[in-house]
Length: 138
Image 1: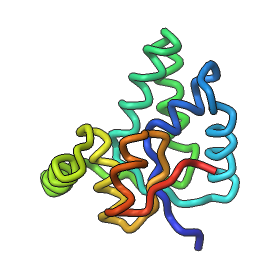
Image 2: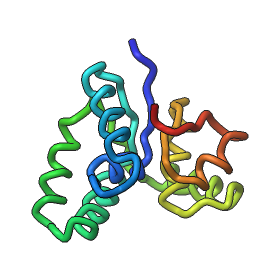
Image 3: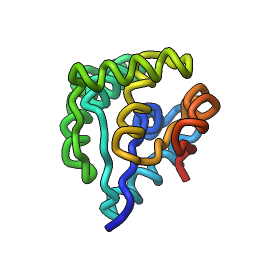
């Protein structure tokens, strides 16, 4: 079995934003994960984060909601709901590593499930290596 990953919303948003630098590389990364059936462990937060960002960037609610539906079947994803325990753990991570709230949720999922965190977020990349494995998509 392939080792599970947690992929930050920044990678998905970049992949589906063709005008952004690195978009093709992010899409190639996600496509490879899908083809290789790499399991992902993702917070349910990924869905509204990607939908909101794509709707704003592409000025299309319809496109954003279509993408949300595609994400549900795009990869081998186990969805993790933000319950009170995960919220508490995320809060600790946010405070300790000075992360934005949503970024701390991805970090908490990666830490709780022992996955590597894949991200384009500079704060996650620089502040989390002491806590968990974190890197850019390749």
